[in-house]
Image 1 (tube, rainbow, N blue to C red):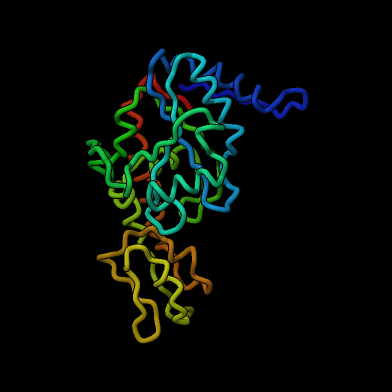
Image 2 (cartoon, rainbow, N blue to C red):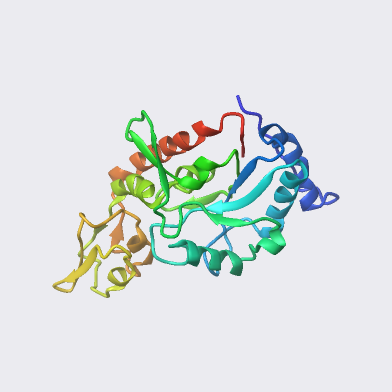
Amino acid sequence: MSQVFFSSLNKHLRWDQMIINICEKIIPNTIKSGDLVAVKLHMGERGGGTFIKPSLIKPIVDFIKNIGGEPFLTDTSTLYRRSRGNAIEYLKTALLNGFSPEFIGCPIIIADGLNGESEVEVSFNGKHLSKVYVASTFMAVDSLIVVSHGKGHRLCGFGGSIKNVGMGCLSQKGKILIHKVSQPKVNIEKCVGCGTCEKQCRWNAIKLINGLANINYEKCVGCLDCFIVCPFEAVSPPEHGKEEVLIRLAEAAAAVLKKFKGKLAF
């Protein structure tokens, strides 16, 4: 059974000291001097605010360095189009959101390469997954520190540590294996043929046919970007796919974490 530590918002205790107090309880036994330490987090969309702020990440990095670890911040690129679709766009976004190596005190590495193609195939005996494509950087490090923020999620209901690892530690191919079962459908009674989804789809899976959105399911990876951007709520994920996505996420997370026995903290 894992130990879980809580810290209250004590007005007499600075945020950075509160974080250091938690680090002292959960990190030292996972890192030895010289270890390469991946600090896995989500550095936010461009212009967004739903991420853990750099000032709260820096104390974790400083703590790891002080006990002899070699930390770096890391995440992977996204399936959907926007501000984290490849390593260059993600690094630009991270910098705009305040994650600079100069301030944080360590490098920032996008774990799945320039276009999400850098991966290691990991075998897994799951209900739905027999293999998981893990971003190669995670398979090359000694220790993993997972820093997650909880949030509501349209597909998963709630996103936290399992999603941070089960989706966020995978290559593009790995993410597709999870998302493929969430291919959306178009409600033709709501669709007005505005073309927003067609323009947004990174995978060229949507075309307007006779003035209505039509999804090519051979091309669709199930990223649900069309669902998010549709101004008329004419696109929706399949009800039957949600439960399987959650199971696949958990299986993928387990496949990643089995490498880090005794070298892992959340």
